[in-house]
Amino acid sequence: MIKVCHISSAHPPFDVRIFHKECISLVKAGYDVSLVVTHDKHETVQGVKMIPLPPTKGRIHRMVIKTHFAFYRALKTKSKIYHFHDPELMIAGILLKIMGKKVVFDSHENVSSQIENKSWIGNKPVRLLVKNCYRLFEKFAILFYDTVVSVTPEIVDFLSPKKGVLVRNYPIISLIENQGSRTEEKEQTTLIYAGGLTKIRGIKEICEAVKLTEKNVELILLGNWESEKFKNECLTNKNKVKYLGVLPLKEVYPMMKNADLGMATLYPEKNHLNSLPIKAFEYMACNLPILMSNLPYWVNTFEGCAMFVDPNSVEAIKEKIEWFVDHKESGKEMGRFGNAEVKRKYSWEEESKELVNMYKSILK
Image 1 (cartoon, rainbow, N blue to C red):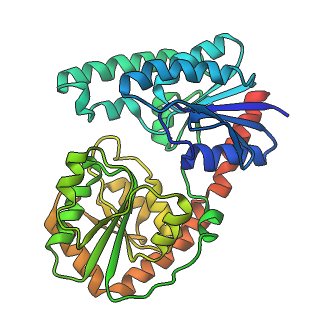
Image 2: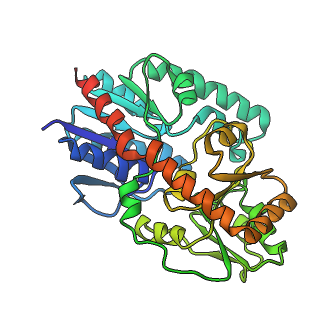
């Protein structure tokens, strides 16, 4: 049995893409899979051998100390293929390739574009310098790797047209369908957002819109906040906005199925313009219509499944929510159409074949 080791110093142990999709799909395909990741113990979960890393103690610790732990613990698995998921592990990837291993770099997003929005790095000129330095090193590091994976054709072409492989981040339809069904019918209209609770994802605007409307609505938020300060700015009306923390998938999907409208009003940042947000596909799989940013790429992809709005306009978001409350049958039709589309075109069950074929190609 061929040994495979996935490595992440930044993601949670049961990350949807890394653990639930890629690692479990490879176990089903007959590989011996280890996952080096932040966790509290050695254990085997659904066939995946969990190899724990210590908790992160700040960015410097994660990017320097933790990457060393990750490299040496991954090396101990004596795997043939090493598949890493964080940019701070690029040097580890180079070392593994020099040691004769097969190496896959899985870049979930366009990191160099992300750097432009990371205010903690410094002012705009500093971020531009860091972005350019990162991109130069990324291009150099990719020369060593066997394959570079990403989630959209645009990112694949940007990173490496020759070595790039597209493995889209589509939902696991069977997993969602097995997590219950809609059980509640109520007068109140429930909106839901599940994901990173950050400024550039438009969270404050949707909270303000819900607070301003006189309609009988509530907003449920699930995920991690970017800061305590931002959390307090958003949760000013706890009667209409409920924060329920970070929940396992088996609890998230039933909540989506019992909501009425999924929210995905991300800002038109460069890194979002050609993205395919996993939450949108999850909403569709749960029969939810979506209120989305009016990004042209999204309008083209999700037409018929969603309503579109300027994510920076609280008033426009409020008006769309109020329209939805008054036209729920139209919303249900969007939800049914989206559900049929996601089953037809956007399932992980089909997309996982690209991952398995990539591994076969590497081994050849």
